[in-house]
Figure (tube, rainbow, N blue to C red):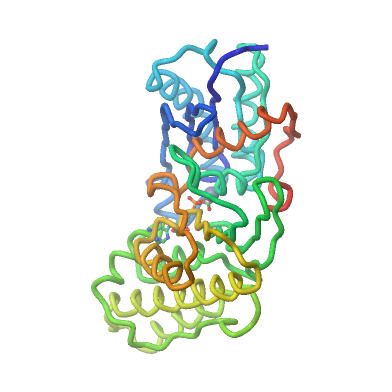
Length: 332
Ligand code: KG4
Ligand code: ZN
């Protein structure tokens, strides 16, 4: 067993091949992300077989680059943490097999990490931000959920989406507007130039802590069908306003029901400047601390996976390593 002081993280659950080296206190020594966006752009979403093949090509080069960028040698590592789910099964298998092979070759333990737990831990990268109890809003391409954490080890799911995730809705609306993939950043930029003037529906706004975004997406489709000459910026602004209205209202309701010291917003959509701004105002009005990962670690990365792996190493715990496409946030 190695006695090194660093963990190598590997992430390949969707369309980014990532590797990173992270110290126990969350300091990120290196973080490499090989994006596949240009490969999937023409399909308007992630094409699973194309993603798996690209991971096969990029996994080892990404690890090599992460080790080089960190200026370390494999003997400086204590363990390897790799995403085992949820995600695309073929993509996960490539990451887990890569980690297993390296672990065997370098004599290191390999820990299978829940990708959602990784997103949660992203808020503590490079700096400890989260204080407990905490309310978590996880908004990514695959998930939209609210969870309450009494402490760092106790989590309960308190709300989730019944259909599309908010990131998926951004991606689908971007596709309708012919803006390519991923849709989030480009919709955000376009929305800044438009007005919220279409009064799009706010699904389930007054109703509990669950979400639904498929009706909103359909409303955008109908709107575009009703008049193909609408100003795209106004459509984007109306869509973003509806999403933000729902997300902030649900956070506010959850914070009343589950009093918390901090609101933690993680996942790809947490990179949205508009969401960051409205969340800041909400937290100020409720006197709650807003915890956001640095922008570059909101979207998928391997540093968050390595930090999550540290929790197991510290506790002297092993994990399941079998890749699995489904994994709940409560399997934390
Ligand atoms: O967390 P993530 O990188 O991958 C998953 O685990 O799914 O999230 C990807 C999602 C995509 O739907 C993408 O459109 C969205 O995050 N996204 C954004 C922004 N950047 C990425 N959504 C809104 N605003 C952004 N700036
Ligand atoms: Zn993710």
